[in-house]
Figure 1 (tube, rainbow, N blue to C red):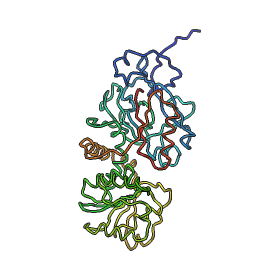
Figure 2: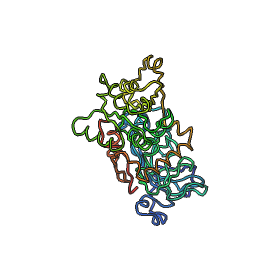
Figure 3: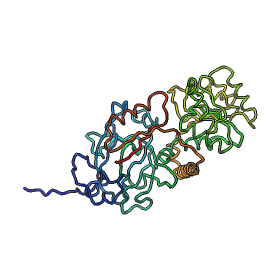
Figure 4: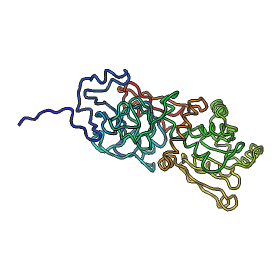
Length: 404
């Protein structure tokens, strides 16, 4: 019995196939695209894509592989996206390790041999093509994930239109858009939502050299706030250079994590803040452990400490006197949960921060670009991922996509 070879197959909802099954000449569709968008568009409009995937939780170097697959033309309300930039955040690594509260699902939509997940939560995508039912985005638009867990460490993907949020790309770089939804939004909401702060008030934070820390410094300065910024100790010129950087961004005082543990630090804080209308009202903590409690000890009566990270992996040991006699509040903030609960407020915050960036009022966090083209090898990508787990870094790692 003879069988007729049918190609392409009838698309399913997402119609993503392993690349090993296609060998198709380039198409007229690709010829009409700019050079950096045409290389891996095959006949019938199939997009050739690559993604970092993991079939189980573990150390990134042990579980991540680079998987190739094909994406069919979009239909209905599907959009095909090309990645422009995607940062590497600590939460992304924690998801791979299996230590984060949420994680992308393990599935075989990409044609992997076993159910696998794609890491990454932030990115800036360009819309390559949109299905006929799409109403909010069109070809050439820039979009970001509407929620976390989309899986952004890949060259291309196809999703329903409502999974992404359109942004105004005018006057912005892909790197700026890709890094807006976590760190700047976290800093913005912590300064706005937990205790009333007016011009001249002080706040204290650790992890001040992080993306959140740098954002808090800049936003605080814009809003007339003064800040005490704690960073990890660095010797000699390196430490001096970092202090200068943060002060140029708007930090009032910069100290290291050794100084804050010393006896008498609280008296130093009182000297710095004596010109303020009230004692310290707010502490932002991403370290935890004894370093986090050192922050809490500087707060005035009725103050609030917001914890948004636990880099030390040590618990906060709150003394009863802080609760009874100083009436301190200890709260947590998880920007992912906040954004899922208040999507419109998230969009407004993102648009406001992007407006500040566009107008030159908000500086980017230092970044280390990691080129990712169609020819990039797995080993090159894994080396960068592993680097996010190690020591001092020159800046936030970010995948920069080209020729994909």
